[in-house]
Image (cartoon, rainbow, N blue to C red; front, side, top):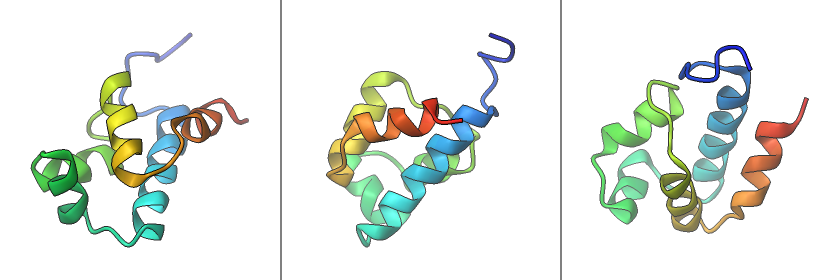
Length: 80
């Protein structure tokens, strides 16, 4: 499991691309999503730019705010 602690990994990149696409498809800006999550908008930017990883609880809340199934995001991580 080489590089599992790195913020930048192929799996994290796929997840971040998926999250950003979901945000855009739902019509949210970084600012509007951050308001739903109760976080600074810079938090969204850091997640989408792979400067910050989400823990599992944050990931689920992020998905709930976007009204998407977290399992779909996990499939993105696991896809080859």
